[in-house]
Length: 72
Image (tube, rainbow, N blue to C red; front, side):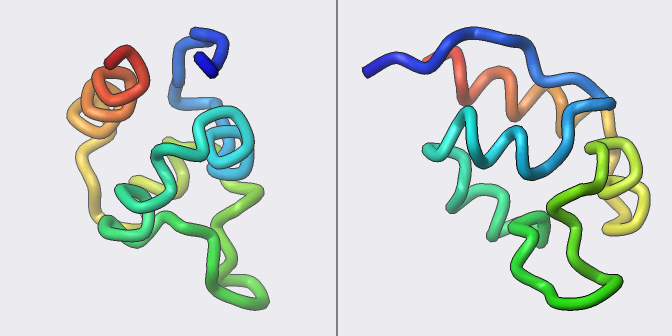
């Protein structure tokens, strides 16, 4: 089943990515954006730009990689 191809942007939340693209769960866990933390450190409701900044990830490269992976 193919997920709809809404582009992942800086304002997409981590939970939206996980809900719309469950195939990205393992990758997000690898880079620390799985939303599995508890309390104020939970990234699920964060927009991608905020989560990337918090985790020290380069946003343009992250967006390119996520969108590349969902277009396979």
